[in-house]
View 1 (cartoon, helix red, strand yellow):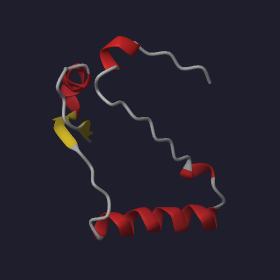
View 2 (cartoon, rainbow, N blue to C red):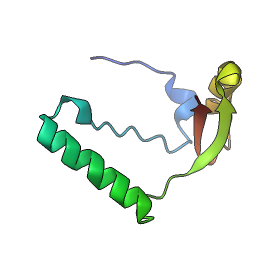
View 3 (cartoon, one colour):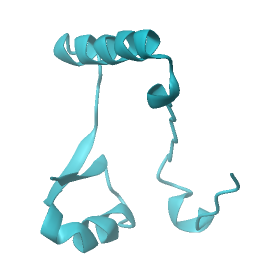
View 4 (cartoon, helix red, strand yellow):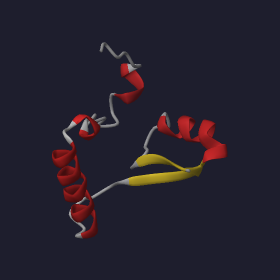
Length: 79
């Protein structure tokens, strides 16, 4: 519960950590939260900044991309 990370490389990346522990909600609340997220996505209400998408076999490159300065969006891995 005490994460550490290299602060310097992330300082100018406007790093934001959003944690939503939906999986620990009671089933009815969990289903409602999942539906709300899906609906928001379908309605275009979620503005996701995706910088790059890597294939699973390129996950090391994806990791390196998270450390690249000037990145403009999330780095995703296609599974």
